Image 1 (cartoon, rainbow, N blue to C red):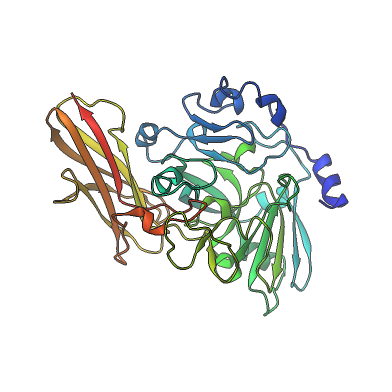
Image 2: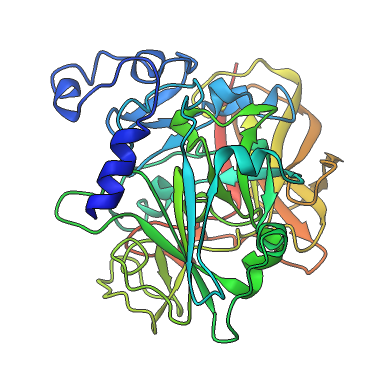
Length: 403
C-alpha cells in the first residue's frame, strides 16, 4: 500500500459502531450472531465466517418482499476497512475517487461532487459468485467458504454513470483503453496485493455507476460505502467496494485477486481436477448465469400435507427477459409453469410461485428458469465444476418431509 493511500485511509477512516479485530473473534466465533458481528444486521442471518464478515440470508426471508432489506442482505468481504462492521453509512467528507491511466487528464472526484451530479438507479440482483459452492462440493470438494444458496439479494443502487462522469469532466480515454482497473480502501490479504479487479471498458463505460446510495439511503459501511462501483448483471465480486481508484489501461490486470482468484476454466474439467488459472485458460466472474432458487418450502423444515404454495426467485444477467420458470414434483418427469412476477428492472429478479397439493411422505421439488435466449439451468450443475466453486446454476433441487 502506498504512503499516499495510507495517509488517505487514516484521514478518512470509516465511522461506525465498534471496530473488531480478527483476533477478537477467534475465541467467540461460535457464540456471536450476525447482529453482534455487524451492527444493524438481522440476528437470524447465518454466520459462515466472523471476520471478515461472511453472512448468508436464510432463504425463506428472501420470499417476503421483492426488494431485500438492508438488514437481510448477505455479506461477503475478503477484508474490510477499520470500523466497517456496521450498517451505518460512512461519515466522511473527504472521500475521493481517483481516475487515472490512459486519459487526457487525471482527476480526483469527491463524494460531494458525485452527489451533485445526475444520478442513475438500478434495481438488480447482487449475488456472490460463490453462492451455491457447497453444491459443487457434492461432486468434489471446492475451496473457500461453503455457501448454501442465500448469498444473494435484490436491491436498488443509485449513483453516477461512469460515462456521465467522464463526459461532465471533459475526460477522454485513449483509443488503446481496453480495461478499467478498480480498487478500494480495504486492506490486502496477508502477504498479497491490494484487492483489484479488471473490468472490460467496452461494457462498463455505459453500464457501470459509481453508486452512493443503496435501497434509498447511503450505502452502509459493510456493503462498500460511501462509494461502490456497480455494474448490474454481473457477479458481486466485480462490484468493487469502498471505491478509491479507477485506472484506464490497455492491459488486463494480473493482480492476485483477478487471476488466479475469481475465475473459471474456459473449458469443462472433471470434478476434482487441479487447475492452474491463467488469463489465457480461464474467464473472470462476470455476467451471471440464468438461475432459479426455491425459497419455500425449505429443505429440512417439515411441511404439512395438503395445499402448499411453492415460492422462489429467478434471474440472469439482464441481457434477455426470463420467459418461464418450470417446477417439477416428480424428479423431472413432468414440469408445470409457475406464475411469474417480474421486477420493473431487467436486472432485478423475477418471483415465481406454484400451488401444489402434497401427500404425506418425502416430496422432491425442482425448479428451472428459461430466458428469451433459451439459456437455462443444467440438470447436473457439476458439469461446470471448478476448484473454487464459482457460478453454480444447476437446476434447483430440494427434498422436504411432508407430515
